Image (tube, rainbow, N blue to C red; front, side, top):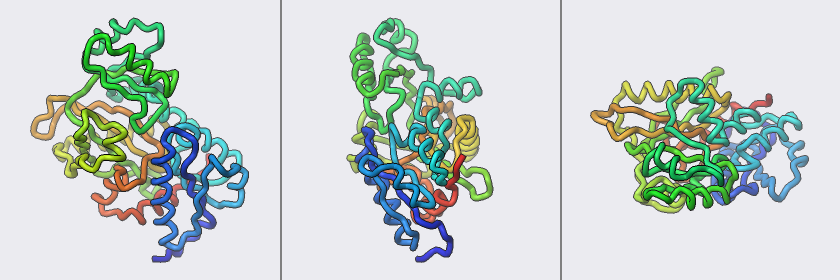
Length: 314
């Protein structure tokens, strides 16, 4: 298939130097192949190994970087300076979306429900936080993705050790109340008319204790359920609220909003809690946005073109 659309010379940013480098290489390779198969003049570009000023020879950039320096506003700022259109959210939304703590603060101010949380430091009263949030609870670095540095604390006295693990990945650490009714995600893409479309919701059922790095990228027994098991009315409600959560952070282009259901899910209805935002989702064979797009009748090739079409500056 050869497209008539002239995107010019396209750089697919992949790799980078974050802890999610290997995932980014896989995502970028899939996107690159899909673009090239459609006759688009696309080229791999690894900012770990290539100087950023080399991007001045490109007309558009498809960002497939995950984690620090690629998803946190850094590369977006560089591309703004070079005035090259790029996919995904801008500098501010990328920086906020990468920071789970500040995303939660913003959502809470907008009355968007998120699990209770506490900021944790080396001087925190760990026992008091365990008492306030209850057990089990999750401890995670605020500025990492792919479940890097996350611990599920199940026993009293375990928070301090979990904090130290998370702090190795990021000095900003949060403890979060456990919500046990299932993990779900809502993919969001541009509708091509200046607004966004929420894709069908997918429920994630890991065989591990939670949806960790291994369950996301290595194991082949993680289940992805669509239909997701929620009622049509509940799914529509959550899709609409996910769009609000996405827009509240100032996101654009495409992304993903993850949420949890509580243990009171009955007949497809229960309480939901928005967990976090991903402004540069994975595009591997295990990734959720391509999976949801396929459910909606959008092929991987069509998806990458729609994302590329939404590239912008400013």
